[in-house]
Amino acid sequence: MRTSRGLRRLPRAPRAGAHPGLRAWTPLAGRGRSGSPGAAGLRGSHAGSAGGSAGLNLLSWKPCVPTMRLVILDNYDLASEWAAKYICNRIIQFKPGQDRYFTLGLPTGSTPLGCYKKLIEYHKNGDLSFKYVKTFNMDEYVGLPRNHPESYHSYMWNNFFKHIDIDPNNAHILDGNATDLQAECDAFEKKIKEAGGIDLFVGGIGPDGHIAFNEPGSSLVSRTRLKTLAMDTILANAKYFDGDLSKVPTMALTVGVGTVMDAREVMILITGAHKAFALYKAIEEGVNHMWTVSAFQQHPRTIFVCDEDATLELRVKTVKYFKGLMHVHNKLVDPLYSMKEGN
Image (cartoon, rainbow, N blue to C red; front, side, top):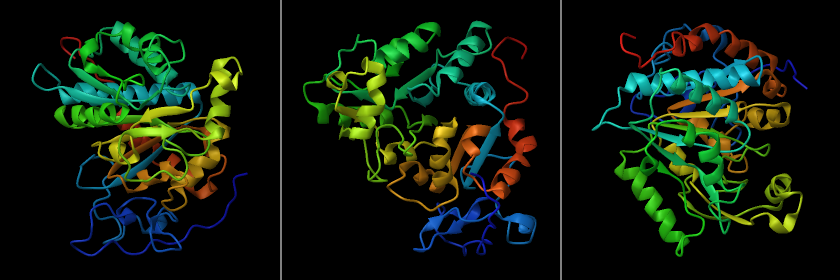
């Protein structure tokens, strides 16, 4: 249940020359009990005080100004639409071309489906093209045939790629049937580097706060690798395999937390009451490898996009604070840009 517990006051902004990744520059910066950067408090009435809002310009996304945003929409459909509009605007503002590709990291699962449907709609309306976009997916099962209906290859092509104008050679998905799985992971990291890195990595999380297949206990500096899946994950995925545990893959290839952290920008979609506690851990508590999504408190440009149900475990003051910023956040998606001539 949401409570009205008070929030701790923030320490002062870090001294000149401090590490740029410190969370003390963000709206939720604080320090956990162990002294590690966390998200224990809100700036509150000190938001406009001298030295208390240094670099906190919510109207401007600047790489040198670490900012964590929480965008709260009323329901899943509105959260999906906001995320799709943001992706659309970021691609168009980038002005991609033959020698300038926008690089997008993408997730699978049920959460991003609504976002993908809106992006397909924008494409079919002529507002958005993926001709000069490269994509890198987060993960893929090991040993599952590429054409299996539950493979992430099938998911991406059936739910997104075949409906847009992306060049198949620019849609990168890990091969879970590679002869040398470690070599496949190393090659994936190399392809990301050769593409110039990820401009925007979109992700979703599980109820236990894992992103991609970086389950509780994963290193927060991990890279793309082979991962043995936890029993909780196997049980959760059984619904996609007729409830038969023997059919559920037990291993997967996944990008690491460090791989996603290297992206210039990260947007994480979190919807549903069943993920409310994970959002609480991501926003209001410190960085913890048992909740890998919490690592993104320290990313210089992170946007959490959620629906109302996902906020049920957050403090009332936290929700009120971020809802009070929606007029600022909505300027990121309104107006919605278009690639149509004259727009």
